[in-house]
Structure formats: C-alpha cells, structure tokens
Length: 187
Image (cartoon, rainbow, N blue to C red; front, side, top):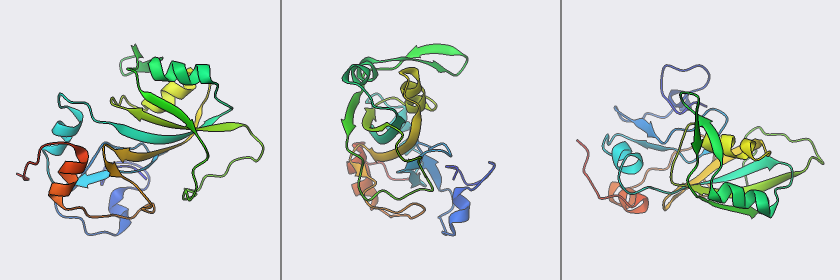
C-alpha cells in the first residue's frame, strides 16, 4: 500500500474504508515494499518539527536481510556506508544503531513467503536521517539485500501489535510527548 491518499498506482490509504478527517496526510512515508508505523495527522506543523527540525528524531526498523550478517558488517552499518542518493550523488550515512536480533515473534505475514533454508538475518536499525530507501541501500551496499522492512517506532511512538491496515487514534498531547516535540495546536 502506498503512503498516500491519491495520485499513485496501486493500493492507497484512501482504500482502507476509514472516514479520515479532511486534511489528513501521512508523515514519514513508507514505500510500497515497506510496512509498519505510519503517522497520519491533520496538523501541518508536525512534518517540519519532526523531520526538518534541529533535533533529529529516531526511527527504528526491523529488517530481514539475505545471508548471515557478520559483526564486521554490523560495525560498517553502524559507522556509515556510502549509498547513492537523489541526483546520482554518493552519500555517507551518519552513524546509527544496528544490532542483530532474533526473528521477531507475532509478526503479521504481510504476504511474505520465503524459501525455506535460505540463510538470513534480522537486524534492528535505528536512524536519525531518512534518505529515500536508505536502509535498503545501506544493506545492499554491504552485500545483504533487504527482504523485509518494518518500521516499529518513531521516537517513543510504537507500532506494538497494531495489525496492518488498522488505525489507532492518540490524544494530541500524548502524541506530541511520545514524539518528543513541543505541543503545537493545529492551525
């Protein structure tokens, strides 16, 4: 599903059958091959505060990659790797948190089927920057193509057990507190 309401190809947010308030828009988009936590709001100030402000905000992902990942490769991911970004420019990613984790329990299948017996690893990666398809480019750059990508949190706002396609409304002041941004009433 695309993280937009109109103008794209494929399934979009407007097809969820939920009567969203006028002016609802996504923040921190996910591409159509990624899944997990997506923020929807009518408050136009949040995008600027969260992703364009002076204080970087942490986003955490569970990532399934092809093949076993060595400690040396994890260290490369942590300290920064060169990826290609918009304009065909090489970019060295900023240091981030990376750890190998056990396969998460209670994940929704998401329609993913993997060939049994192929080696893989699960990583937990926390970034404070978000270039287009950054995690996919990072893992590919170190020889471990991404097979599944799930955003599990933005700051202290967590996906938890919320099923795909479901929405959980949060009180605005609690929402701002979990995102660690100053409360600003909507326009």
